[in-house]
Image 1 (cartoon, rainbow, N blue to C red):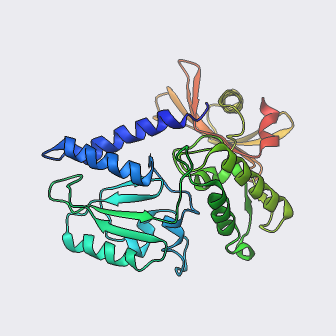
Image 2: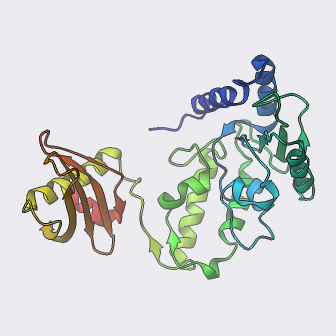
Image 3: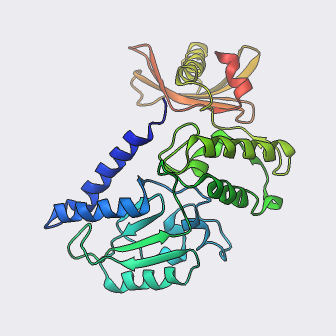
Length: 311
């Protein structure tokens, strides 16, 4: 389904408004504060892309990579947090924690923090705004394309010598685009930026500098195709089952399929089924309901070329 940024932004705003104002004595005043923050910081989001300055600046001198606010020492006092394209607001109940957050952030070049005088989340909380002031927005509310591409490329090439595998676009798309996102855009980056990020990643992957390419996600296939793959393998596994063995192999379309299967509750109603081909070159897991002759399944994982053999 196409990613519709305006409708997604509206949903995110509504969710944030409820979260930040439902406990306030004056919810309307809290909503006005939220509207001001959206004007200053951009749309409400759920997770930052891993190249975003709000993550990379405080992680600069750290020995481990952080993909969330909670993994960074500078933000260790945050509580009840809502994120935006350019930063976040957090509402600890302790004034000391709020002051320590401001002090820690103010030491970082490219970021600023300040206390809000209006209540948010709770009347007894001490809201703090943290802003990546180096982030500038396009007219559509996404991060300026040139900056986004530079920050993404710098993060990608941070330490390639320690890479063991090259992750595909589909494997790490959420880390590149942030969340919520579509197939190549999000509230952080528009389709122009997203398309170029994918080209940059694939160019480096194809060069071999990150190691062999690791395929895992099959999201490049339509949901209908992914469902067909899962159903074909689970039905074939159930049909090949001798009603006793919990582990067995069977052949399908020239491939050896390894199966784990068991009666989930011991009542002959529901089977738990896992099918693996190769060294997890394709993996399908789900349940089969015998009376209804109906499978359910989680998302398949594996290599595209192998998965497409079961369409």
